[in-house]
Length: 216
Ligand code: ATP
Image (tube, rainbow, N blue to C red; front, side, top):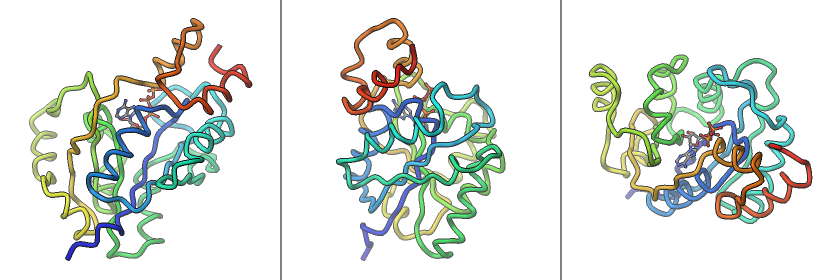
């Protein structure tokens, strides 16, 4: 019998700021497939992206406020504490070594990140150490940009969530999570213009942003 309570997942990103487009799909996912724990891991210097507007401390504080009343989530500071760029492959290798070779581990990404995934540093190492669970995100195509990447996706794809629990790593699962048309970019733009963001992120995070005068 499949033990539905052992699968842990890491969820990395900039979280500048954390919002409902991060939290709600993942909560739905946890109910659908059974996740014992989701570890939110804000990154430090994302190699392929402009620097975040909020500091590492502020992004961490906002995640802490967002997950305060949600026992599914924990926060991992290892990438925030690192001075060098955060490479997911390196982080997942370290996590695998900590957890041992047989435990099922997963890395959660949104549909936009799946499309660029084959360009990530040592992306094959990521799949050697964990499964990839993809949440739906509006505005991004469901197929990969070129044939080689589409073939790579199909080679790893599973439609059976039990595989995520019975195998330690290596599968890609496209989860049927609800769509949220929210991005941190949209929130930063709306805050800059003084527009309402009440439906886009938790009130505790919005209060923190206002108290600290972020994204103005
Ligand atoms: P930005 O707008 O600053 O680029 P973002 O909103 O895309 O930020 P990130 O912190 O970069 O947020 O995202 C972390 C992870 O969450 C990524 O894997 C991304 O695909 C996923 N994600 C972010 N927003 C959504 C959303 N609305 N639906 C599904 N996945 C999302």
